[in-house]
Length: 227
Image 1: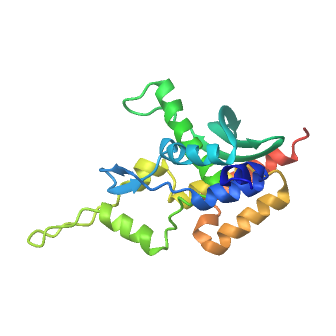
Image 2 (image 1 turned 135 degrees about the vertical axis):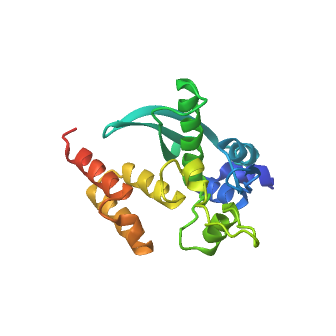
Image 3 (image 1 turned 90 degrees about the vertical axis):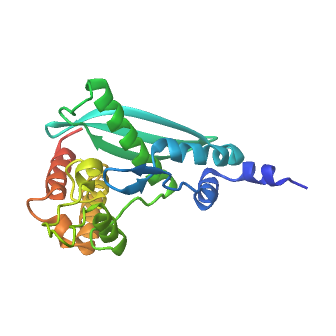
């Protein structure tokens, strides 16, 4: 009679990933005291998933490359799961800042790499990091980060700092994830599907002067170029 471990080894890659996604627990075990919110890192996900990969006989590698999109450089991270001759990938992008106070060039690239790797792992293992701007969780998170005025000396409420610290110029994490999905599209049809999905969630994501509109135009122009 086959043991549980042997049964796991006999599964194909798709079945093994389903099992890993079902069992994976990657809690937000880190805390940002400036934004007053919890978060998880790529390292946290890797620590949680390594035993499940071994249990299912799945090899995983993560690679980075620097890509030029429009006039900005991005770190593109690819997380690849392999079992036998089968492979499946998750891709994440993070834009490099031109400069960041207190960091040299290598540290800026390293921070972008960690960010991109986290989203590549999120995609591969179905870890949802999205907090939509119209959800109670996002609103509560924003309010928690916002200093409250003293009753005796009322003061204007300050804007929460989370978007500035974690999203690097994006209105929300949803907007960042949507941009990454657009930049990973391989056809105009895929691009339109992503655009429609986020337009249904909230039209604010697809405003004409927004990040997603620029990402749509950039990726559409790239797809038109002869290979």
